[in-house]
Length: 120
Image (cartoon, rainbow, N blue to C red):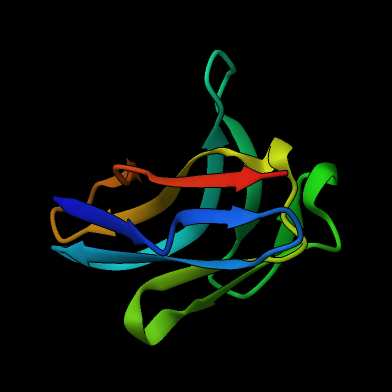
């Protein structure tokens, strides 16, 4: 099984920054794409950013130029640097990863989420 643990959320004022981290652990052979999603109250979960194992990135239009996703493959860790935060960025942020387990199964795994609250 694969576990994802997020950290780094919190409450900030508009214009502030936070750095989210997501560590993947467990009986894994490899971790492929890692991504960040978010879900605001009453809204559907949406993609924020994704990064491949080779470093290719993709962002939601709403965060381009403000958020940066990165990863450390040696640590099976993904990061999301969030700058110039806006109240509309308030949501629970979830980490997602595709990983091959030692059992030869490729699956999609989710973390428990970390709350980001931005006040105006």
